[in-house]
Length: 210
Image (cartoon, rainbow, N blue to C red; front, side, top):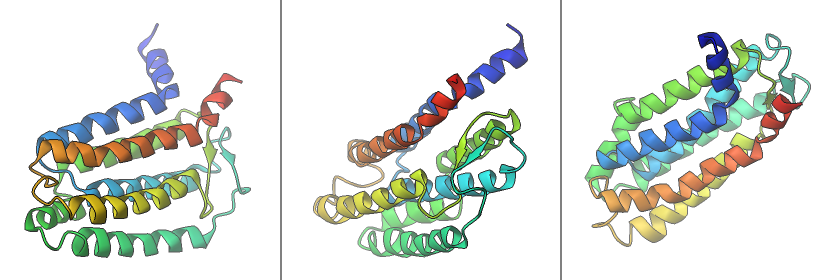
């Protein structure tokens, strides 16, 4: 098997690599005391934005891409992402962790791209999405405000709120970035959300098989 063929086959299995890279970098961030609820929710926000932007750019460049709303970009989706950004940064970045300076400091590192595990995840999802279109993979794209990523972002905000106010605030000595076991427990529901993304978009794999 030639190198280009092997590479192309791996691109087909991008969902597997997407989850493996996310899991690996997130666990490394936990081990290095650099994971917070804001880190995880903010990643889901960027994941949705990157996919929206790349899919919009390649919507007419990848003839195998299937647009769910007939290639029409809805401004409401971008507006909604802006509202989410303000809410996530203000609420989860500052207010929810205001009692813990360590959490605030870690959140600011994520916000200003000083967390290299977070940055690595973003770089991977950007390159991955571009390669999916560059290699002409059959993939469904969603340009509306109600995409699978947007749905997961909704859920992640709800889950993040529950975790922050009913878990982290009640046990502040346990759930700090430096406490690896506490950080690992915080990560678990978000790993489940990542699996939900895989499930909601599994039809892409069926497109590749047909």
